Image (cartoon, rainbow, N blue to C red; front, side, top):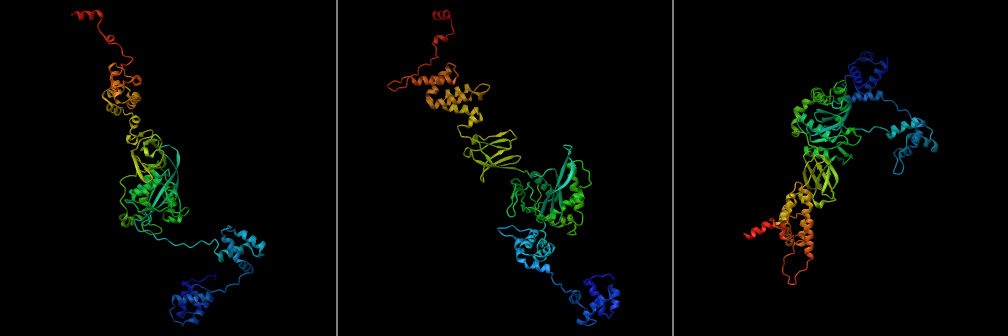
Length: 529
């Protein structure tokens, strides 16, 4: 009969039959062991217990230990040789602040060369493994599942190639997999891209599929979600953090290269690919997504889970759905966050190929910008300093209040405001400005209107008002000539009395006879009458 070591239940059966009075021969035949083996167990039992006694598990174990115990063989000479150098081997394997840990093969070479070791590398390997726990896998503990509605784990998995119905070319298809930890119910969102917008859209589709939002999300370290991975304080992509805040989700990313941080979803990538994707024919991205959703509900959600031994969809409907946050009404408007945007001297910043104005006091500073599809928000530090409606590429949004008061009219080509400002200087100044700006292209004359206003500051309102009146009388609408007349008048000598005198007529003024419309004959006839 071939040798076999008896297990606990075999030993218990041998001793049960011995206690019932059966012979060693019969016990060997009935149990299927060698008669000498049966005799060894019954001999030990006779020395410890009386026949007819019902042995407990501890008593059976004691008999088995006495029979099965083997004397330990003494260590070999090679083993003793290695054990002699144990402190040195431990130090070399661990390393210190000054030296790196050494490879075991290098340690064997050094021991042979410098310390007279007479042992094989295999003996050294066994000693390091058995005595020093070198390359021994550390023990682990099984982490308990989170309460219902508390946690979901997220991972991207590569599915394969499909034809993009928009381009007609084959593209790599990825799957965003969201697994609820408590129920193991999951959702798959196929996509061609791994961007922040894609991730947020996939998560929103998952919440709509589940009918609720989970409280804590454990993603991997994809760049679409994690800006700077760090074990204790990872930095999220601003747009993804904006999404998490908007949905009321706390994000706890897994550590880099630590799949055990999200084990509930890690092994689902292969399952999704083999059970759903492989062997199927898809006509485009829309078909892939509808197929994935049906598979999640009818196949993955309806199976008996290998670990929990329960149906995920049934557990979810019965326990988890009621504990989740309300689902979103629609897809989240994922914003673009721009850091250190420079405010240019023209009071504008450039955001996604459009221009937006910023108040004067922030010129040449750096601001932070949040831009969604409808609104652009501009922050200086933590302060919201400006909001604009979103403009398309090439567009511009300018608030006149952001400019200095004396420059906003010119910057915005506000002709009406310029007319009003001229009227404030005087009646005839206002009329003169109205004549200047009354053409079909008024903004081309704005510079002359500004020059007219500057004359008011240089020569005074009274003189400019009188000069405009004179110029209008002779239909002279030319700011340069008005300026020349004012300059000429300013050089004229003033009377000693200081009284106000009539300004000399402009040099272009002609005698009144020049403007007569009657001929000399008609004039003499009129006088005779």
